[in-house]
Image (cartoon, rainbow, N blue to C red; front, side):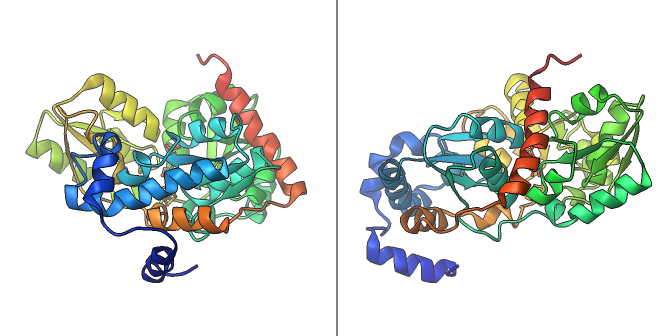
Length: 350
Ligand code: 13P
Ligand code: SF4
């Protein structure tokens, strides 16, 4: 893949991408969704890319699925569907378009491909990985099965297709508790996120949960002391943590949920001050819709999610490079685990 500067130069020969206040004005309806966090000069830079992508997207018959951690210009400017991992997986089962562009990380594109084997699924940067997905292979699943014979394996969607194929059922942070609770076994193996597993163990004490030793490089940076410090500084602050954070961090929070769970919570509760203990773009993406909420806290970015840029999206739509492929035998097995999760999530909980 070309670096960002070379990519800009190549694209400039193909499209009119100079900063433009005219194109910025013509796309003011999109800018209104992000004008609290994107400055007018930055929008004049982004708008020509956004306009070119939206035009090319229609010509290619493509749909753009974007995760909640994408930057505001992707999230509000070019995405057709936004959501958390579960919502994007469910949306991927409904896509009519022949081409899906996944603005997110590689495992998300793979999940879309597993669910749509005949469609073209593009990831704008093949190196958009995930520390959790890198932490385990199918051999690790076999190791856990040997250690805990008979226990079902619940695997986080943040994994490769091979790992999903070796598992019994997938989960995301929004359905993990429901799935673990519903399994007919006293012992449940959760892979690869040890913190998600420990947080679910606290919610489902009737089960013995054992876990793999993986973690998210973004969420493991937060400490319980960080949260206590913010609360001491502003006692009325509402702290909302993603369940990939260590359990002592989640214990200090007022609420814990998936990225969409966090958005729903803040949207409904409207706290004056909120600290989202998760990836930095989340607060930026909901900031305009919630002008009464003051978002505070450190900006921890996911280096993998941030590999996805407007330049790379335009390049992938232009060249149709970056198609994700999954071995059909692996995909068939992985689909069983993903579909079980989707079916499980559709059941009434409780
Ligand atoms: P969600 O399922 O909550 O969107 O989380 C995905 C992820 O990678 C969080 O780090
Ligand atoms: Fe993976 Fe963490 Fe990045 Fe999510 S935030 S994609 S879990 S590294």
